Length: 267
Ligand SMILES: O=C(O)CCC(=O)C(=O)O
Image 1: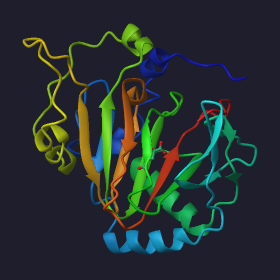
Image 2 (image 1 turned 180 degrees about the horizontal axis):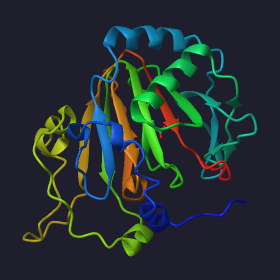
Image 3 (image 1 turned 60 degrees about the vertical axis):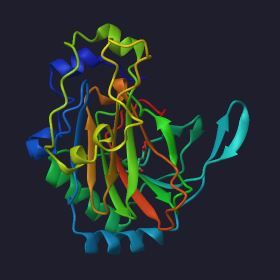
Image 4 (image 1 turned 90 degrees about the vertical axis):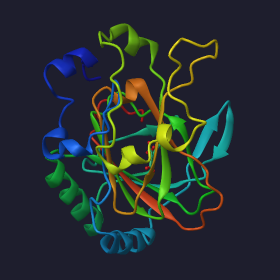
């Protein structure tokens, strides 16, 4: 087993702040206790369409069976997983992921392009296939050992929801000041943030009424060809999801590039 460093140690030596350097400050979503970026036009739509079609033909897609409350459930999303290390293993919901070592040429090129543009390297990519709007991913947080996650969207736009839901341990170790005030529109994502768009997802209660505080949410549409980067302490404080949107008939593929700790096999 490899030694685990605390999040505080990682923050101190700056190891978590790896993708920021090459992203424009305007891409930052300025969320409290998070380091999240959104670039709507990371790649051209025509290119994204071509890549979507080619990746759809991969012969490595499969629908994992997950264990939920002791029952076997087939996940609605198909996935395909690749790693840069032939010995690399990963568990997802307790099940070993069907990991492939040799990247197909297109995937290798895409990862190389993302790495160059962000100034970071990745050792793993998980592709998620949402065949239509009935396919979704529930509210979850990624493995805390993920230092940086970059997610490229291809195909039909889907809604992305981030919900403030800090782990107690994160709150205990956080010496952070009161939440940052949300700044007005610095990127396209902010202009569609739910607080502006959807009255149901209210901002936190200011303590002046008797209503319970609602969790803070950020909601925006992941465009065809867009990139989301989540890094640093984000996973400790926020969950994320792609909800069902049954009216959507088109498909989407996300490519989630990660820097996983090779000593840690749980996703
Ligand atoms: O498809 C996406 O953009 C999100 C995927 C995701 O949440 C994950 O792989 O953890």
